[in-house]
Image (cartoon, rainbow, N blue to C red; front, top):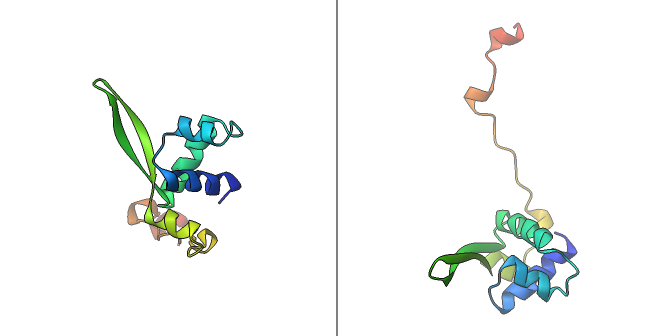
Length: 103
């Protein structure tokens, strides 16, 4: 987690926004591109969720809402540093047979 991540979660706890609105709400200290990048990281951690919001008949925007894990983080009930993904075993198609290695 970075400092900007917590600020993003706080803003999303108020109401859903898109990356551009979040960048403005953060007083322009962070670019919309950087906000978008952090939103994807937070989405991978299941702290936020994206959805498409219809703006006009022919146009929709990606909006973001805070997820349950994000709400729990803001309440101090979740430590994101403890949720470290464990690597999965290599699939059989990604390993070489024993005779390839010479044994």
